[in-house]
Amino acid sequence: MNKNLPFTGAVLLGGVLIVGSAAVSFAGTQDYEFQPVSTNVKQGQASLVSVRLIDKRTGKPVSDAVILTTRMDMAPEGMEMMTTPVVAAASTEPGVYAFKSDFVMAGGWRFKLAAKVQGEPETIQGEVVLKAAP
Ligand SMILES: [Cu+2]
Image (cartoon, rainbow, N blue to C red; front, side):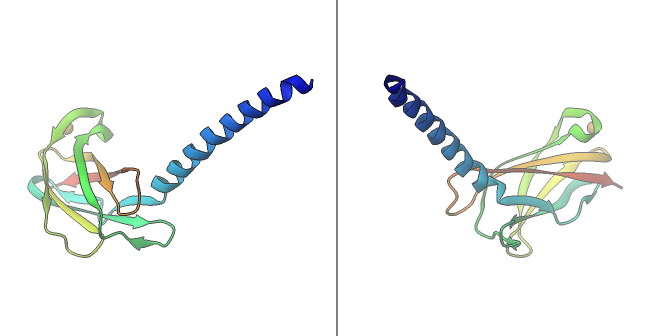
């Protein structure tokens, strides 16, 4: 029995290490959330879309994020392959990230974002669902 103890200890230690590092990164990105300023957007060219990035621990907006990637598609309507370009636009207030996009079809659009936040090693991922109408 004694001979098995060191082996058991090593396995336990390995398990703790893996669980520990996963918990740390998971907790970090979970602390942030993208929220639509408004879910309603205007159908047509160059429509404005604004999302707020908040730190859920404080409820405060995060103003120093760098948006890495964006994707706009019609997944909510079963048209995931239907995408439209997104370009950055002037922000209206700290913690709000503004974009322009061409909503060529009315209905539900999914806006996916990835961002880097100061002090957070993991990339923040999020998505919001918008409704385009004339
Ligand atoms: Cu469509």
